[in-house]
Image 1 (spheres, rainbow, N blue to C red):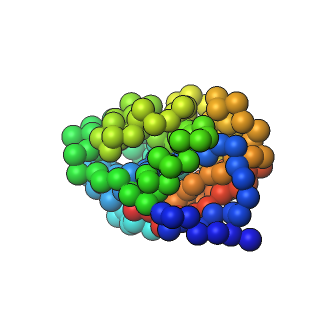
Image 2 (cartoon, one colour; image 1 turned 90 degrees about the vertical axis):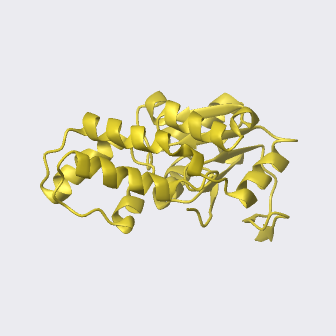
Image 3 (tube, rainbow, N blue to C red; image 1 turned 180 degrees about the horizontal axis):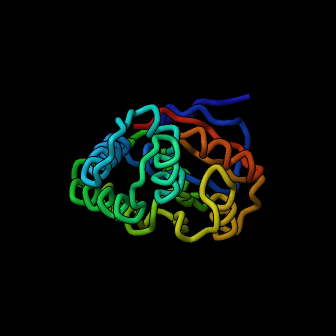
Length: 201
């Protein structure tokens, strides 16, 4: 059974002890800029394949270096993952001023943070994730921010969410995850957490 929150999100009708938010596409409407940054980075490194939004979205939440490795395997490329990722992050950070908040999700986070611990669990790297949260004025809201460079495995493995729960000192079974990607939903399920899939961007 579900209920509709004042912000317009459909959530399970039960009490949770902690809330875990994805960053890109969930708190921040940053996926369009990330896609632009990937296009720039691949072109800048001589890629021959054509990146599509659907393919890029299918890898949302995957470690960025692993993303390039999968591109190499799927499209018979030989790109340097570290160079491509560095170019992608530089383009993204140079254009962060263009990223707006996802207001209904942000409003929900602010409301539940008044009474419960809240955290971010993102497949991005620490510097980029925290700069994004700074750009939308949210970094100080969260008790914990967990990024791919702080855990062994990124989504769809449960590591990010389990670490966020540990830092909030909340039983994973009593956490609600807010996500915009299927890999994140798989990670939440693997962590034993309930999750809602929102329309991100």
